[in-house]
Length: 61
Image (cartoon, rainbow, N blue to C red; front, side, top):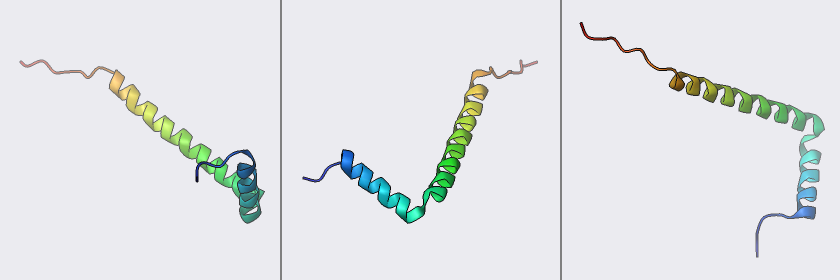
C-alpha cells in the first residue's frame, strides 16, 4: 500500500534533490522561503495591531 515515505526513503529523496539542484541553490531557496514567511507574519501582525486599536467615533452634533 502506498503511504508517506519513511526514514530511508526520505534520505534517498533528499540525496536526489541535492544532486539535482546542488547545495547552493537549495540554500538560496531556503533563505527566500524564510524571508517570505517572515514578511507574511509581519503583515499579519500589522493587521492584528490595527484590529486591536479602538476606532474613534465622531459624536453627532
